[in-house]
Image (cartoon, rainbow, N blue to C red; front, side, top):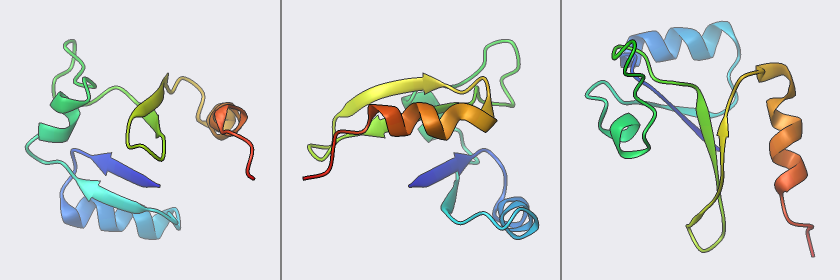
Length: 85
């Protein structure tokens, strides 16, 4: 699992330490990843929409989630995972 943010390395490091973030958080300061994944918010270009992508073993996007409730988001994604063999 990876995260991406428009913030700087220092800001992402501070966030990860403050919230004990257990995942790698990538810095997308030039917004290239955000633009590629279509999360730029036209109403506020400095901030991306919160979205996540479930990517399958074949490296294709299985599902796209607009994150509206961070508290329930993990449950939504877990429900879409295929059963483990």
